[in-house]
Image (cartoon, rainbow, N blue to C red; front, side, top):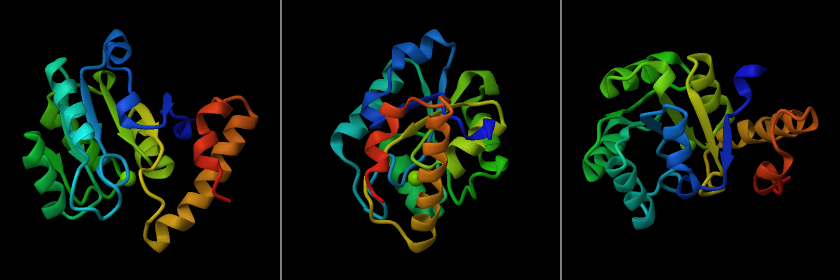
Length: 178
Ligand SMILES: [Mg+2]
């Protein structure tokens, strides 16, 4: 269960405190695409989110996309943002996160993973010793399997909150759905 405890929970990528990450010695970000940067299946990224990536780069962060989406979709966003990407990542398997770290040229202790799913993004990150930031999903539209996982995810988050392992207020917005 310790691999399911995010280091930070924020409503949106836009609310990630980059200065606080730098204070922790974090220099690289491996960022999920679907429902983290772009509503699931959507072809377009919100300007504010694209600008946030630019800001992170300008602040000195190395940024790479790590997505379970097909390489074509992953690559189109990577090109748009001018950053590398690992597609068809099969998160939570370690391989893609390791590849992302390789592309960033950074060790585990300096890399944060940003994503909207507990069992793929957070679990994958924590197992490798990476800092894990959980964001609320941008959209509730998801394919069937993910919807099932969301139920389990909400159950787990409630359990973690009851045990005081995550801040109950920070997960409130995710839990209003069942
Ligand atoms: Mg996602």
